[in-house]
Length: 178
Image (tube, rainbow, N blue to C red):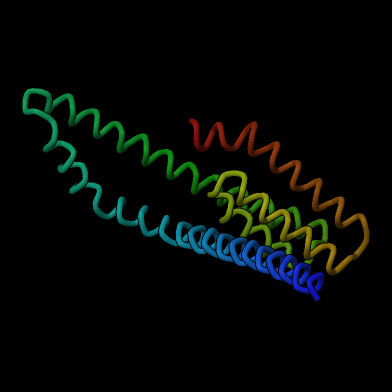
């Protein structure tokens, strides 16, 4: 009976520790997921706010600059606005081009829902590395789920590699960096 009490206590503690660890992992993962989704949806709202209220933001920044530096500060703030405007336009144009190329390429090699997946990958490409990776994994999952042969899977990977090379060497330097 003493033996049963000792081992039942140890087993109870072990189960309690395992349950605690599992709950901690579940809540931590859920919290991370919620924060990621919140960031994903708040980022466009933030950019929209910045675009709509740029003049009032600009005037607020200029009001913080002493009067004797107002002319230089105004020029600097205008230059920052021009550079940010060009960067945002370049990134959006790059995403449109990437989405079009992915859609066309995946459709041509026979990926099921290739047009939709390609356009979605282009939209997600606004998030560096994550967007194109998620799009590729989704397309790969669809390709394996509707397995039509290794040619389609190889074509999918080939188009992805070619578009990534094109993006890194030509598109991003000219559209975003130019």
